[in-house]
Length: 185
Image (cartoon, rainbow, N blue to C red; front, side, top):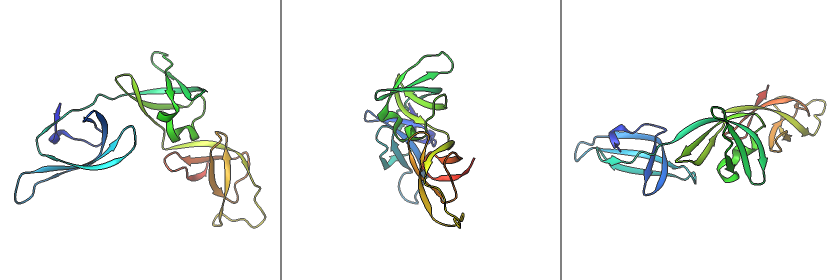
């Protein structure tokens, strides 16, 4: 248990049986009345973001979240198999937990997986990854970097928008949060 005075960004709270990450918080001391804490919370499972206000000093339950670095091995049906780099345990993570990270996940890539009492919560990817363009239409003479974009299929099977001068076989940097092209690798 902790009080609302102990809140920090990234902390995970257990409120009404659900896990919530603190996205941001602000202690407010109005001229009249008692102080309070205004927070923005993100549901760990659904991703829903809500604003919640707590009276200053009340107790909130802090959830224990164990973050472990794991290496992605392979996909088996709807599950992704990872290997814990410390004890070589190989948990199966459901596709729903992996989410959009599956679009940028390569075999033998290391990611951080958060667990709560043995249950996987989410997969935390690096901000940017380098992937090879598997297929894209060829660029035409006169295509410039300031021109438009075209779709390109990555080696993972995901499709992103790239500038017209990018060709098949090139390695590019991709933002894992938005799926945006960041530049050549």
